[in-house]
Image 1 (cartoon, rainbow, N blue to C red):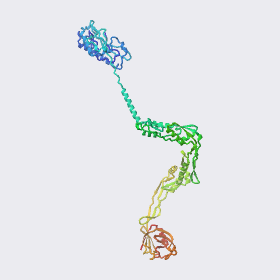
Image 2: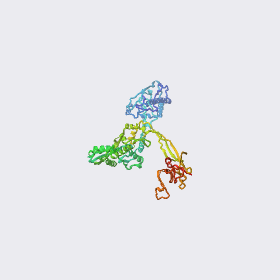
Image 3: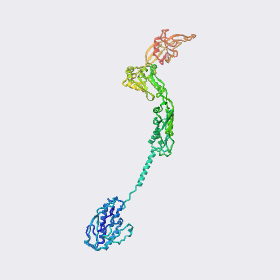
Length: 638
């Protein structure tokens, strides 16, 4: 018998008709029984073929999942039995299979029931190589021909003979009949992702270019000769700083060819600021800002660091300067200074200029003629003088204040005893203060500060204008808590402020106003003194005689003379019709040469007796002189 099986290594079974049709007899693939009909009609053969085809398709579908990754047939296919046909035979379509079945039906003799049997058994094949997997347990159907049935071999169909297949060629089932198997499917071509990868790469490149255009500095940009184009700001800053740090200065001449670098000298530039300005003015995206002029970078040097390094490199060029000093002189009770004396060494400013030029020119190595030059002291004279002025100002103003009043002054020598002056950093002076010594003075403050209120008293005219103060008003005050004053004052003195404002509570004074005026009644030959519209005193007087009358009207006192000679004759002996009265006391003028005064040459008060003045007893004239200040109103009436 001839077995029908799938070719070893097949991946996908074709769904074409796969049943081999025997010329003599057909065995039912499903029941295993021989058809009793001697004549197998075309319908039955078609059914048988369809059953076998379904079985083969089912088997092929089962193994398709197992063989889906196989793509190429190995050369081992050539070793398959001659009974198996090439894969191309499987491409015979359903129409050709049906035609072959029809030919078998036409030529077939009656089928002997006893000679036809149906047998189904699994067919296995050995794998040709590692790339080929075998379809297992594929059921096949044997078609056994009758002993006397004629058989013919149907030649395998190759791809070249597809158009030459004879539709009338018989389909045999004898022992020499060829065996057919399904050809494997062509492997599905892999999808190409080249375009995807190219697109991704291009996108990344565009993004990178966009990012670079807003983060990088324009090409051709340089700072002090250091190229920073196409660099981010951080890298550009590092490049500028590194160039300066690496710049080497060779000390020639007396320097003995010693070498120092910018880093050794403490050299620095504002690299971050310069780079930020360069990026702002010349970003990569702005093509109009490409290749700008180089930007200068001012170089700074730490003088203290540079001097230390240079002294170590060329010690023979150095001699130490002498610092200015400061001390308290008890004789003058002031601080005095001693001037500084310069030393010698390498001129750091000239060295900085050389480094600046080299950095600007892009040179990383430059020579400097190191010669001895004057070197100023760490503490110059002007610093000592300025500190002395500040300290002497402290001595002059030291004290405890209430407002602007220096209520409790501190003597200069006492204040100086509180202070200690020592050299400070970078040529300055530090001032420290003894707060414990200040505390001794703070303990005396309450007695010196506290006082009672004193009310004011003033004299005014009738309009309220102040003519004079009889008593000056003084506010009362009481010192507050003194805890911590010593420490606070010590801190102020160390900072240069010697005026300590005391915590004081003040009580305002009251003011008493006395309105004063004078009236002269010529008819009554009496003078009245008014205070706050009340007559406080009245005196008999002697006014001017009819030939030299006292003038009436309203006047104001304008002058006070304690004693003088009266009369023209006193000053001009040749004067006619004149008089001279010497040593007239307590004269208070209110109208030209007329005024109140004391009279010692008569006692006839209440009667007209004078040359126009108002005569009064001496004690009364003295009282008016003191009682009526300048500006007091005088009203004379008849």
